[in-house]
Length: 225
Image (cartoon, rainbow, N blue to C red):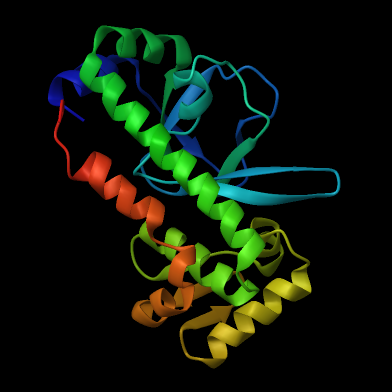
């Protein structure tokens, strides 16, 4: 973000603690605040009473609630909640919209981020329809690994099943497969990444497209590029 754009937002950013599973964006409810995670990360899930599945993950690289607000809506059918506890910077949606209206560079940056989110959504749908459970787990663990310091990810098998949209037994079996290949080590409530290159090989096309687009549109392009 350009220094001028950060200075425009900074007076309106409110630090807040984000405990595990705290809801940030409720489905079909007006989005009043948006959130910049400083650490920890947030899951975006969709579904119904028949089941839910994760379609997005947002950490320190992103902005929770960006898509509906920046696309001139005020709500979404999806649910965003804290998957790894941490710290957030909250900003009022109306104040963010005002800043975007005043700055073409800020608007460009945030719309580029929305583009990345749309690509991630498409790839998540493709992965859920195409890849085996082990491949999907590998891609999901890589996304989590990108958003934490170190190699340890706090996650229960029950929560992992929710993220992958499967029964708990299916998630447990997928973890056991990766553990048997010495790619990860699983302990109660925690998974440690032992071999990221092997995880990348296993994930294949289920991981990397949205990350490459983020690098191209945001990391690799200065303001106004």
